[in-house]
Length: 362
Image (tube, rainbow, N blue to C red; front, side):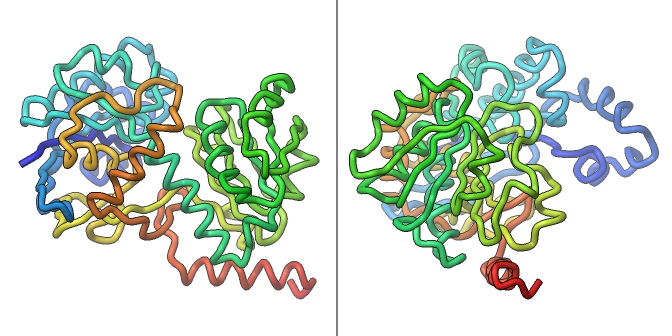
């Protein structure tokens, strides 16, 4: 039996902390955040029933790391490192041989490097499989929206970053898009990325989001901005946006104001076996986030090594985790957007609204 741990944390005081501690509803959020900062990490659930198509089985543990996204980004980094490291040690004490850093535990600080030094087990952020499923999700979402990537204009926002560069390479493979626009602030670095891409891909560089995004059919965005950079007026009807960034690049106003565009944050992954997570994180039974799936894949493979660490992402690691996912029977089975699952019925509605807007009916 292979064993892993995965760190989770509350996304919001009202939605998550108050669900566990209802009294939190009666206090200001800042007070609740101050209180939970000193709550020690603990096991939240035992994960059972994972079985690879190769026959290997695994069990794991969700470990709660009680900090909100704002706290991960704004509190003293050493305090945050200590909190995450203590949570990883809880997983280690359960018998886990690898621990995955979920959500903002992978964003804070140096992307797991310091945590890796503080425990005796392997650590991964899950970013490699997250990147792979995001691009696969963008392709599938485009197909459901009636967008053919080979005929589409694709914009990569934050193309000079490690993840943006990898996303550009994945989309450009085999001349996979009609035209690619690489967006960033440094023209020299953008030119370097453009020169690396498959020669069959028409790629150009630009710095003006306001001018370029309204022309894009597919947008992949992965900047390091603290605030949203993509707003409702940036998007054409029927656009498909894949937001890989944390914090999000796409404003929540897009979800509120644009029912004619598809925004996804990555793929929902079906885990092989009769999986019981014993914790409700808003997905159908047996489904997980890609970062979580990467941790499980590595455990099933017996690859107890720190796989995706730091702020850099290696293209070969991304391809390798995709191969291992297929080997063990993991499948992309849906989408998520603004922390919620997106059904094909919802996508059909978005497509209908987009067609109506393009025709001037609505």
